[in-house]
Image 1 (cartoon, one colour):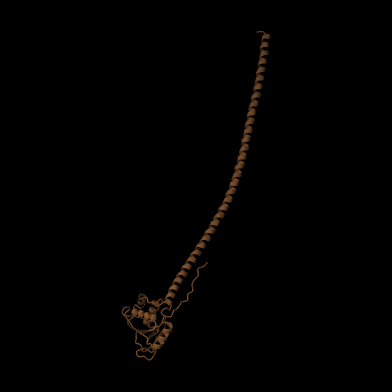
Image 2 (cartoon, rainbow, N blue to C red; image 1 turned 30 degrees about the vertical axis):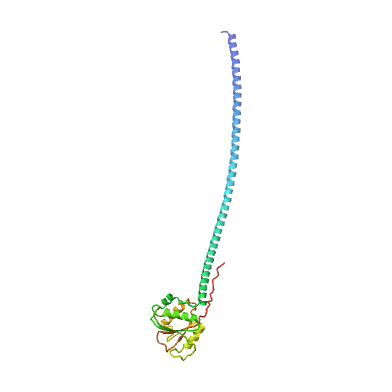
Length: 277
């Protein structure tokens, strides 16, 4: 091969190499730009994503802060509501107690009023004996005897004297009982009458009843039982009128003289408890 041919070969080879080099450089430049653009785009996207993430984080933090503040406010309101509820429950309990106390006081007042009206009715109306109570109050006492005197011009005295005779006599507790009216003419020297006859009669006229016995001391349990039976058997509160007792040494033991006069209304004075407001 001649030198000219080799030179021509190398010249073309140089041209080819220069072309290849140019193409490689151009390709590297182009691909570098493409890669750079891609990286820039990726960086921008990452920056955008980071910005969004920061925005979301800031929003989340704000929401969390607002939620915490809301929770705090809710907790305050809840505590206030609980305190209000507790206060109202306390007030309700107090009002319920006051209502219960008022109802109790009203019930007591009503019972007291009913008792008063019952006693008032017994005090004003004719005297009546509760035979069962009368007998129970004399249970266990020895048998005695009684002379019952009543005012002949008083129908109520007569009826009450008959009740006493029935309660004390054979149909009652089994005492020996005689019943008779006071004489129309008042005399203190009548036969078979006790020394205190006129005193008994005058007292019965004024108070409604009087009793004479040989022994009127507190140790005379039979007299005490008779007094309780008469007083409580007619309803208590002085309804019977029996308040005075007289001693007469001429009377036999366990014998009682009972004088029955007109019924004297005895209105009891009662103080009522008013309901609290």
